[in-house]
Length: 344
Image (cartoon, rainbow, N blue to C red; front, side, top):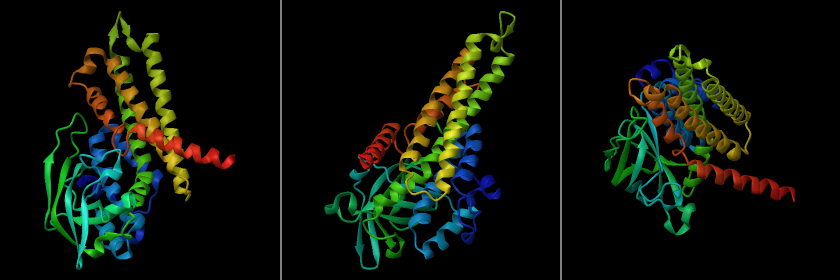
């Protein structure tokens, strides 16, 4: 992470006035893709900092942007986004963490689960309930800093994949923060969360493209050197066709991610459907391609001496985090219903 900060990559999507490079979704996707080609764990830690920055970038006050985005841009502080809880995953409306205004401070109580960069980040964008009677409209977004009284990190998870990335529990026990750490206004929490995911999901698609490309590279290189029946196995049509299908699907995923990124960078507002598509298709594709890469390598692919078994394990989480692929299909279906309803 320090090396990425020294390369100015942490400033990639941060506007120039806050010390960043002023790039957009496309630049972010290209960087994340290339990192993921080598290690999705590293790219997850990197991209999660942008996930934590988006609520401030999209809805923060000028003072919040000046204070926090500049720290993220230089890599001085990593960021994290905290929504998920033990009973609130796909059902984000089920969150229990509460925030109450007491004088000039908000007091937070509750916990968050499976938070990327938990315990490593210095800046956290946290969704908590400020008015339970309003349902989803009663959620608000806050900035919590590492070291705030009453804020601590709990269990660090041992995961199947992306093991280079820290995933941890966050605990808020009478955590007190100044009231000027509220992002936007009270009741805007779920709008903040959904807009953040709309912006970040193509980045998950880019992770999938990079990972699948890395797996294809390994499989093709192995197939050219591995000999059976006195010739490289790439010369067998069965293997060549597997590689051809893998390569075609990688290119299809890349084309979709880049197309959606350019559309989002154009300033388009109707991005929920295409953002979900840019996450859905490439991540399903990466799971398929990495599994096929293991198959091409055969017994070697199942061993930790070769990287494709790690790639296959890493691929699985891409279908799960930042909204499961089943949720992405729900989003796409709902948007199609709206579109065709307007045509009737």
